[in-house]
Length: 69
Image 1 (tube, helix red, strand yellow):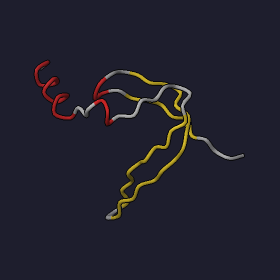
Image 2 (spheres, one colour):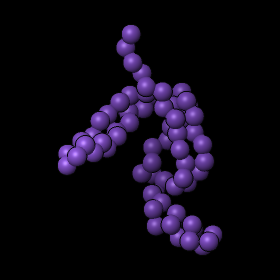
Image 3 (cartoon, helix red, strand yellow):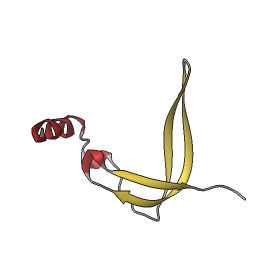
Image 4 (tube, one colour):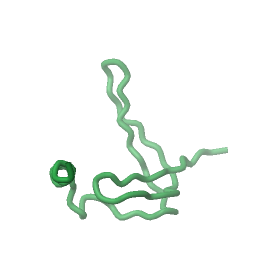
């Protein structure tokens, strides 16, 4: 089982220079691919990174959207 996970990570792992460095507190633009029926579009929003968790391919981050008002 562990070998299968490592093989998946190796296949989908991007080079370190392809992933930009960012930390909690940084402002980032996030592109979200949205599929509605047969149409696909990319929606962009700006937010502040408030957390990062995990490492490698399975790393996640939380962004708080910056809104006016």
